[in-house]
Length: 275
Image (cartoon, rainbow, N blue to C red; front, side, top):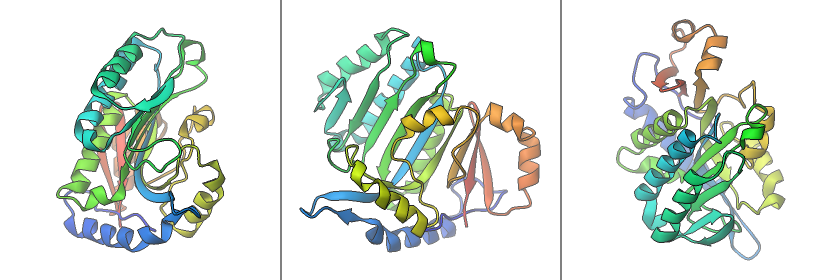
């Protein structure tokens, strides 16, 4: 499964032909990626993910930014969202969501929290979810906080689907002031589905363009001074942009490649790669 690319001088969403070609390829492969258990329960599905790593997850300002991300996601996909994880898994309700938002913002700097809202429990494939794990103050120099959004790939087939997804990755990257991250196609597994990880890896080998991303919060420890890799969308914070010579130099060197587009966000650049 190969991600598609677009010309350097164009905006991120103005190439309808590229989008149509992309969706045709994704639709063709999505059924091959899907896998069910012996009981017929979905255990692997093709999804559209965004994973971002950021600093200062222990601060009040960043907790408010995270809360804003969750509020926006909740408002956008409320009919799909059924479960919330914060200290324990429970049914998602308006009152429970409001209470959790308050608890997150009011949590102490040394408190670490995991918070997610999703369309399914941890034992099932959740095709709509937003997840965050922050870093407490005592570990702030040695680890990064992590935010991950999952959507069904079929969102791209909706009117302005690609444009809407790009708006999400720009918004989330700007809101948490992402240091680095990526967005693209990946296998979505149940959070408790560790036995299916070898299948995820094998599918990523078979289909070029699939990211392997089962536990991004675990990988944060080894991604302090490096990015995970180049994906359909690669998020580069200001620090990484400077290491590459700055925005102007990076754009200039990549201008020879007609399949690469850059877009600015609050804390850096998003590189988009299309065929």
